[in-house]
Length: 537
Image (cartoon, rainbow, N blue to C red; front, side):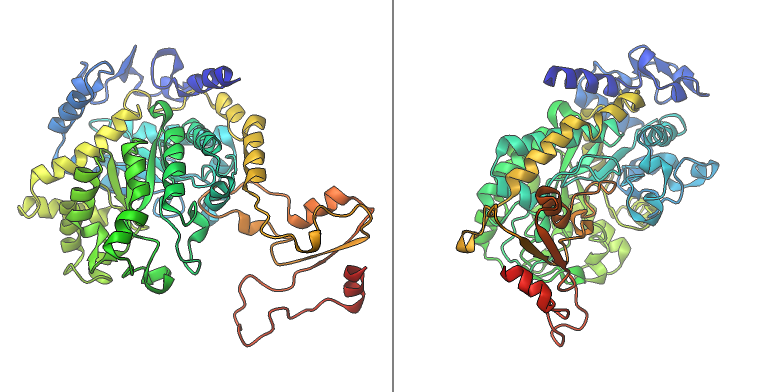
């Protein structure tokens, strides 16, 4: 079965060359640039070193870097958020040739993944085949309509399966952590990576390598657990599964010491982690170190927070000395959204946005991301280079890392998804759903069993199911995973299992969020006497 899957994936991924060129591209106006075994990306009529799939990786990177202008280099340092966020177009328009990304872009994040008001209504998100066609069209703009044809790295979330409307949904990372099954997590990673590449995404922002030590923290639902050993072992497996054969890049987050903010503060107050140096080394860093050294992690997201008063995203110590020099990281670092802006408007270590750009790129940041136009970072960076405040060497070093990852995942040679039919068969297939079901079963943990109520007695007459999530699966669709799936609720599952032989009574009990708490009852609508009598039977 694995051989059959591999063959199917090979069909999906044989892109951009000869007969495997998608029809929409092969019949296009620039079909003359596509040759047997290579693409004339800079349209000069000859095979340059960076266009030669057989050339040495470093030679390809250096050849391309030597041909790039300041404008093209700086465009490889920023994210363009996808449709419904910053980008207002599902497909390229003539206006794109006037936008800053006419000179390329480092990555496009969450494009057509089905999230947001617009994204969930787009046919290019909800229909797998149309999605593949649209992603190819966007990539074709960068291949055919930019001077050097540098492809975009399509990034996406994926901590419980790929954040695409039609992808396979898995338990969130705490569920995966509860399974204590390395082989299972490797398989989840493999499926996530396969589905990502088949849908046109080449970089997935996962796994979450943070360690959750305080249950008050608002993102506990994203981590494997509280133990650094568990997070390290499962993080390595997820990275290896996702990046198998360099099908995609995995980007671990959030580096560093992100999950232990003072008082478990979340939102705009993610600052001042109360963590000793010993805790940093023994608890919060091992998972990142293992993912890089053992898993070959190709991406890292820098976090919002500071440590000892120094913001991570503006810290040469963290992004260069520790991450690259100590851990041996050789991928590219992308900022968490707005963490560059936070250098001046939150942490107050930079005078303004331009100064924040300088601090971030000199610290070691490769790509800045935020829910704002990429111009906000690219234009100040160009000014800084022209003014001599950021050296061309520093810029080259940051761009080199981005290009290296793009070459490693093969998008210079295979920029398109060639077979939408194969993608439709692969994504959320019956086989993948079986792995998801296995993961769901293994994730369950019985914490206590008062009076041996489980397994249920065959003579039971009635059951009360109480709780706001019992008949609502919406909270299971955390935004960093598939959105188009619908699960079986607890209430539905119990009714399906017991049939009509047992009376099942349901009460919501309370809301997930009570705006008037603690001045209102936790259970504002108690069970009726008849309902309570049914439970007592």
